[in-house]
Image (tube, rainbow, N blue to C red; front, side):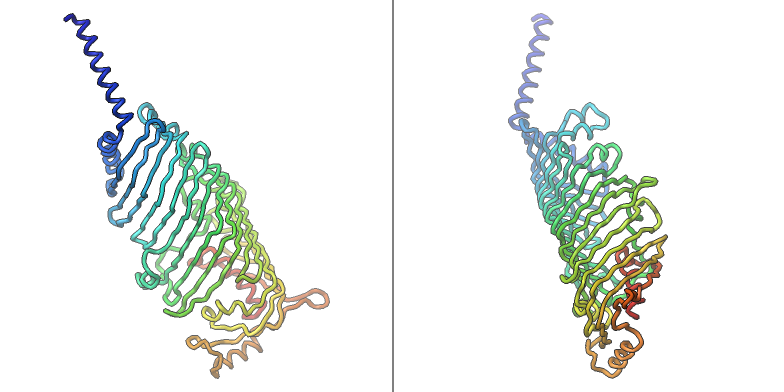
Length: 446
């Protein structure tokens, strides 16, 4: 056999073998995917994150649909032993050649990609919280991300959660039926680690907060960060045109005695719109916040706020109003929290206007109310029948509280002056409320 014929036969054999391999991969890709490819992923992940371990379930690849799927993925951390898992992962329309020929393959490899996961579960054992969502849909061509049934809740019961520390703790539960991010710029995320979106929208959110004030505050703990401090501390640039929350519920609870009923404040039918969420931009316009909801299922409250998020100083301004309500409805919070009981009182209207400059709040509060009568109750028995309870209530009637604050014939009435400096351990919403409370106290007299 001549050399030419030998080379011809060798080429034919090689081409035949390649064709057989290609056909075998097209029609029976699982053996290759679940041996070579899975092993490559596992080794690459372990090399990049030495303190983590990964377990990948059965993998499948559909050549005609260019769809790679996996039955399950589980990742465990080292010291904290956190567990992150999904029961199903699917990637469609991935540009696999980009990983071979390009140095930075992600932008082009994922430009047509659609990624879906089911039953994601992130368990944070160090903080005893768990994050779950039933489905996640990411569409790069459509520039959107959708989370279904997102929930955050503690992994242990309430008393066990509070018992883990000798200091005060905040326990919260969050339920979000759907969260959608529209107009998300994936290219900015891949190239510049920038989070840019047109709109983030969610509805029917339930946020339940409980603080165990039967324990003392840990003075050595880091001070709570304000919204501007959180955003300016991020390395990534954030630019979101609008963040919308509709028809949601907020429950705020403070417990003062173990096993007792906590003080509760509620907001229902909450609608919030935040525009211009921007950090790391000199001279950026402040975020504009408009919120409204039914306070204690009784009165419509409105809030407007201008909050610069690119500034490292806490400077903002906010104003709002509250419609008429029976003040006795506040007893569900005042009795456990303040050991006071409102015997009678009717609020006709309230308004406030506050300016905050470097953590110092000043402004005014207008309250139109009548027939306010407050009694001091016993901290333990919650009774106002004791001698000293009656004495303190009498003092309150005579010297402390202003029974009514109605406009006179000239339209004049007592206007509350706000003067409050943020304490290092104040959370943002606490600071907003404490500033308002200083003005309310200036009117009522407590």
